[in-house]
Length: 113
Length: 112
Image (cartoon, rainbow over all chains, first blue to last red):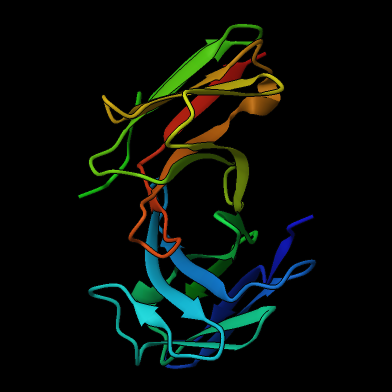
């Protein structure tokens, strides 16, 4: 139980394009999901908290217009990287909160050329 | 600054040996959790220990929590090559709406 999927698992795009990443809780409902970014050999950096039916809460320094988050249902949150640039290349991981435990997706590797 | 800090940053042992990783944190917590991450993959939840618990076991894993010292340890007994991964501790405080603050992680290498 408590499985979270992410799609796509990897994506390569040209600079200036937008990329959407999906995070789904497969066997439970999650009113709260989290989006993280991880650089090589570093820890997870929380970007934002995604709340079903309301606006996401962004961490300090994260541009909300750059990283659009939509949590339209209890099993799906999406992160859209708008007008992506090479510095946005990273590993993006989502998690879904069940009781007091976060269950993580497998991550999405984004490469912006 | 990071709430959780693991040490050591890197640990290399032989298969069959025990591995101990430590985590220190700064503020009061509701619970502390340990996760494992294989290279390029998502995080796998290992174990959760609440602030009123002192020790927990799960298979070959043993976690301790000392709230007076604001520290936790993860012991992996009889390690296997498949245990090679990065291990993170994450704390959840009462006031943080379920958000976890992750430490920098310990990279464990188990040599066959």
